[in-house]
Image (cartoon, rainbow, N blue to C red; front, side):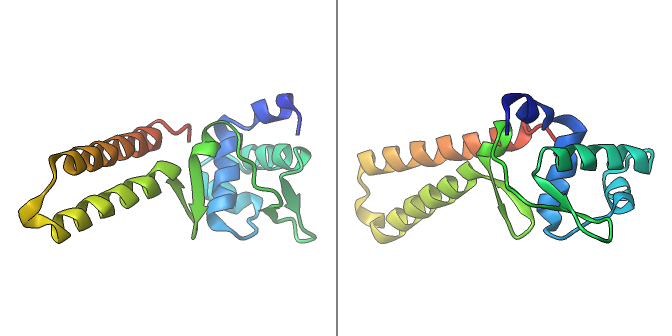
Length: 140
């Protein structure tokens, strides 16, 4: 995909692409229109065709569209799609550091080391901050 095409993956086109990713099944023009609350089906059709021209969406014989290629561009590089949910990558790091912090406290409660507490709490705080920041500043 060219740089110019990647630039087109923003705004409503990005919203349509993300909807197709989240649903994980083929959708028709009217389904996309209703789901994204577009004022007319022609807007949904325009963006679906744009994605088809970019070769990241395919249209089947019944006129329904589905994702043919997952593209990680721009803000999408910061997210993972799992079970129809789009989650920030930092979310998993935050859970990891929070788990380590909790396990450390539970296993070493009477004899806690200040350095271990400081390192793990800073790591946990930074990753949660980044996960929330990315989630709030998404483009869709």
